[in-house]
Image 1: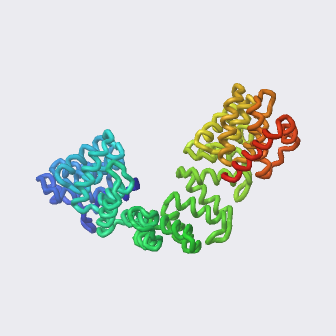
Image 2: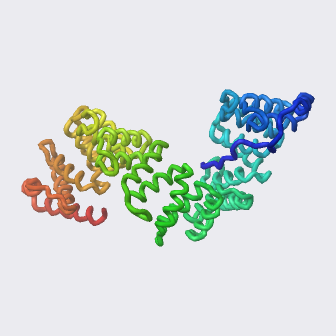
Length: 457
């Protein structure tokens, strides 16, 4: 769930004023307004040197006096560790006091805390309860988040009508976050007839408010629609990227790498990939690694390539898991290590990557990085071949025709070798040798099986 930030709350400014005895006397006599003015002065450095700790102390005075705004503000300070030691549990304590006093923003923040398990035990029902309380008070971000919950079915039963209702309410109250949600519903056809033009209009509303997420979604939509406008897409994506939106930074890198909407420049692509990669984007990490491996846009550096492949793999990107496995298998940028190669191939294979399945089958059959296991090798090579990998079909045919093969293995071997041949890989003499070992009817059956497989894959 994406959450639009309300940021730290700001009290009315005391510009041009200096703190004086009279204001402090009022505060000491219990005047909450005076307490807040003093706290803000110390927070902003207006009329006195900035002092976050002193600001927090005065906010706490106002919070202890029962002011729900100050209680919420103090909770935010504890959440961020501003002027106080960061303490999620203390933040929750103050949010609960303010929320119980009916303060909508505190109810919104408390709802998010329960949904995310921040400072409290995660409790979806309690989170939804507080979001509803805030939404009923027209807190736009609470309304927008309820819309997302109903859209995704998180913590509530999925309901497109409810998602639309809450998102429209939030949009009416000015939430760019909700406008992005509405754009997504129309873009994907969730609960409405799919309508890219209406999606674009909602994204534009959010983007025109300066929402980085709106800028990104608008740019992405403009780039992927059938009448793609890469030039305008690049403009919006660049704005979002400049605002720190990580997916947009990756997308801008992709545009420069491909020369779409901008002049192709792999050095600039590498710059944007790096920004996104440093923020944890696995796709950017993979692409940056690829640039280092080939030396495009950056100096060729195999070790740096493996570094970024490994980061992407640790983030669960399947294609990167195979790349890391290859690096360890052949010793490119790292010391050759078949054990690690087998480990990373297994991660990718279990996630369904045909390259990893084929490579794992090879290591298992050869006994590299662990014990030899022909049965497991056949299992993974078959999975890769079934995923359309012609090289795996060739390897599977070779394995199934080895000296350990049974009669049924040889028929299957001929089938897979024929599949490889029809997919453009020449099996060499293995095909003819194997066919000679089988009866004409077995050979014909294998070729029929191969033709049927190729026609459906």
